[in-house]
Amino acid sequence: MQLIIASKNYSSWSMRPWVLMTHFGVPFDEVVIGLAQADTDQSIRRYSPSGKLPCLIDGDLVVWDSLAISETIAERYPDHAFWPRDPAARAHARAISAEMHSSFAALRTAMPMNIRARVEDFRVGAEAAESVAADIARIDALWSDCLSRSGGPFLFGDFTIADAMYVAVVMRFNSYAPPLSEAAATYAARITALPAVQQWIKAAVQEPGIARYDALI
Image (tube, rainbow, N blue to C red; front, top):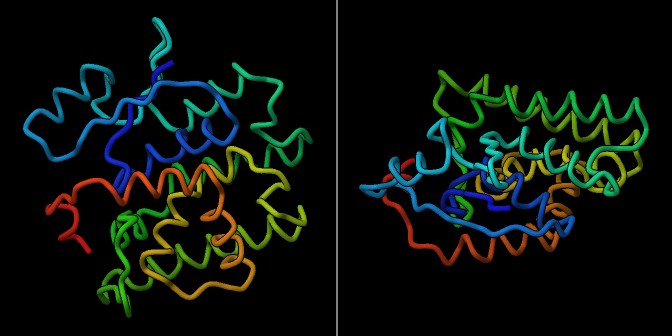
C-alpha cells in the first residue's frame, strides 16, 4: 500500500491515517507531496481524484479521505482493535470521529496546524472569538467525557481511530496553548508522547518552512 500525504508540518488530514497506520504497525510506503509548489496540484491529482490528500493506493483501490482510509484499514486488519470492540463504545467512537470530520470550522480557520509554531498570548478576532471558544470547549468536554467513561489512557481505553482523528487538534493546542481542563491537557500530553506522533513531529520540524502558511500564524 501507498499512503500519499502532504507536508507534515501543515497537513492535519494527512497526519490522521499516517499516525493510525504507524501506531498499529500497518505496512505502507509513504509518498510526501510538498505544498505550495508550482506542480503541487498536478502531483496530487496524479494520485487523488479529489485533488486532496491524504490518499491511500492499494493496487486498483484508491481511497482519498482520512476517515474512509481509516475504515478501510480497519476492515483490512480485523485482528487489530481499530475501533472499540464493545458495540456501544464503537458507535460512540464513530460519532465523535464523524464530528471531528465535519465540525470545528472556526477552530480550523483560526488555529491552522503548524507543528513548529509556538504562539504566545494567542488571541482571536472579536468576530470569531465566540465560535472558536465554543469549538475548544466542545472538544474539551468531549475528551473529558470519553476519558471519564473509559478510564483512559485514551478516549476509549486503548488507542483507536477516534484518537487518531483528534491528533491534529492536539498539535493545534500545543501551538496555540488555549486553556484546557486538567483531563484534556493530560490527554493532549499523552497523545503528543505517543511514539507514532513523535515520529511525525520529528519529520515535520525538519521540513523547510512555507511562507504562505507560516504567515497565517
